[in-house]
Image 1 (cartoon, helix red, strand yellow):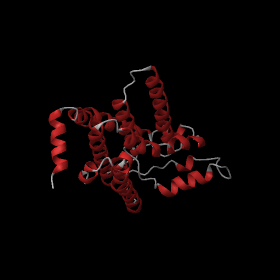
Image 2 (spheres, helix red, strand yellow):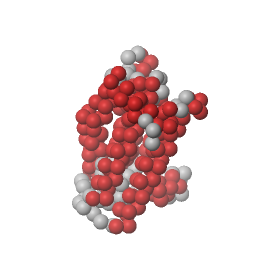
Image 3 (cartoon, rainbow, N blue to C red):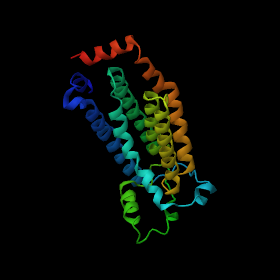
Image 4 (cartoon, rainbow, N blue to C red):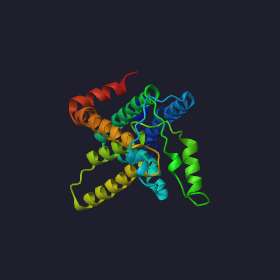
Length: 241
């Protein structure tokens, strides 16, 4: 699937791979997620209830929908910034392939162990405000069956990890950029709970899955692509008919 894009990676202003990655994320992550989300909704099955008192006590904060929606900036950021050299481009392709596979893992959980997020009744005080249409849009797009592990957390954290891997905080400027990135990511994580989209369980399992997958699967594969042997193997695959 990547071969023609790799071999013509200098086309479209050197951004053909970037666009191919974004299209792949749309067709192989966003669309399957939407289908699974509605399948779980129509099946109306509940494997267990992860609600704890803190989920109910956590205050609803209407404006936190803003950091919640910043997730959609993470996808182009990763696809665009992994472009310094051919090594990074190889890692960019493989990272997004692993990102897609992780999404499919989570969708399997949504089907096999579905959980309804029964928190939306705690959303109060937005009627007639500027926030109301935003929540109507969100609730129309997402049925409350996208519980655990939270894909919002999994995918945003994966992007943060790859950006930190590619651009380590080795200078004062990069430290400031990393600080801003981590603050925005923390607000996104917090937003999943304060706008009543997710349980604490969803966030905790997402962070655990992402951490383990990064340490034992994603990072080792990315590091391997820095070796000549792995680069030659990648390039050989890209040249096959």
